[in-house]
Image (tube, rainbow, N blue to C red; front, top):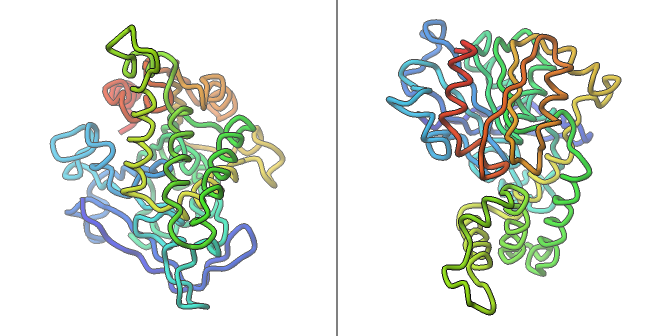
Length: 339
């Protein structure tokens, strides 16, 4: 996979009403791709989750890479970094042309619908007429569903993993708790990093991503007689630091706001009518232990997207199963002849 950039030099109007005078999208694409050869291979477009980047060989390496199921030598594989993320696309880390300083908290709020529009701009820039398989999990699923509604003629096959059609109050409650953690760190509003707040926010998020069984299996104390258990707490601190070392607190806030915006029914007469607009051959995949996006939500999508099918994977690791249960995902794509 090769890292590239698309610069959109025309003002980009955001759904919130603000405008980005210029915009850059960082993306990864199969190294062999050229516009002249674009019709020779099927196109697999992967939409990434909250804090991932545009290189799926980094975070989905069990599925994507040379010799893997999604082989970039066999398919034209594309993954674009979300607007607002700190992995190369225009974000709070970018220089605001009005001030010549990083946007930080002045970065405008973006929506999932904005991201879908960005994906379509990139598709057109690459000279690709359609996507043979669009696949995404969690926030990646939000993008994939929205894109399939906005531009249904562009998407042939669609796989929605561990997501829903409208973000729930349950999810927004986690998001608000994470925003509170960010703002509780005084350095955040001061523009000095907010690292402690980001670590705490990540700790909150992780609980929603995992499961009762997963924690009790992997974080149990080896000494059953210990008075004050430490292992689970140490794991939370470790994961908080791990995110601080690779992500940005202001981009994290942008991602939380983006997630809250997810509602395919907005200005479309409700989610049921919106999902009727999808024409792609669709498979909605749930995870039996997912507490953040329980399987009832994927079943609901499958009931309202024309011709869609519901399938379920088994995992002890909750929502994060969409990243870990790669073999079951591979089997679903193969069995349904989606690529």
